[in-house]
Length: 320
Length: 84
Image (cartoon, rainbow over all chains, first blue to last red; front, side, top):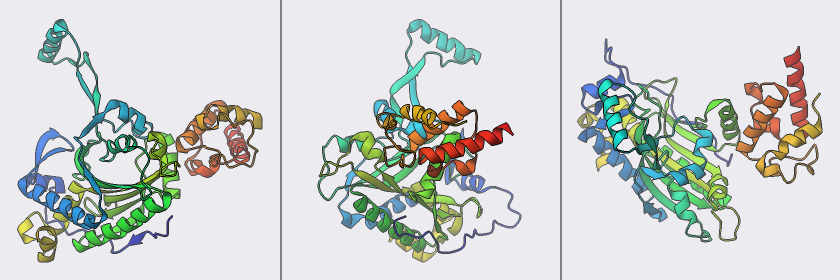
């Protein structure tokens, strides 16, 4: 670990549900019109009020990083399948990946598709993987783009990203959406440069969330790697102090929700993409990720579903 | 019995160690020789298949795969307990 001790700034507490309130947090978000059902768990519409919080949190993240000179890039929520395959995502998370399949048949196949649809049979036989895959994390489209520019300058590079991301994990927890937005800053450079970046954002992110009146704890964490082999990757990640999450109780105190994550990738993406430092050695990378919907949900859970009744200090921070 | 040479043969199947598997000593740190996280997973799966064992959760970490000696000792213990 790079000198950062996991902290627990305040005990995880949740406001009591209304007396006799039988409905879940998700149901109450639907009832209040903040989220809109689509028929798929984890795939929701958002109201204007919900979006106003998302945008305010996004602005806060912009403000916190404003002096750093990050290069802002925005990618659509999909990336080239070739880049996705090379990224190594399928080694760790085959179960979460979302590939885009499209109809690749002829006219007879089309007729067959419609007949299957009419009969309620499987109509997907002529669907084939396209050249497009849904973005699993905002920084995934960035690495090949940065590598194509050649060696990093001596002081490395810093990027500002935001994207909808997809992970196939249907859930009734509103904090576990299948399509959600992730704001990221990504640092590329020497190990010292990227670790200093992560340290700085651990402090900034913690101050930002505490300033929004949220109970939080920063804890060592691991990515949800797939299967038994994944357990080893997860153990290694934890033991090496590569990932920290800023957790806020949203669904429960026992299983708080990771609202921000602070990740040191070591040379993983550098080796994968041929990213080189100015001296030709392999670049290291780190990122800080803000779960924009998760932070919004944490605010709604702790300050209530009526934004107008949020504490004045919180409203001031979000909307000035 | 778990032989060092059998472990070396498995190491040759791990891309990043293929070239040096014959030269690493029993005490050399395999991660310093180029073994990465995914390589250690490949190694774990290869050992499990060859010796018909299953690494328990508490051994699923870097240390268990860090040197040939530790691998030999760990796998030997697991094969004994599997046979018991």
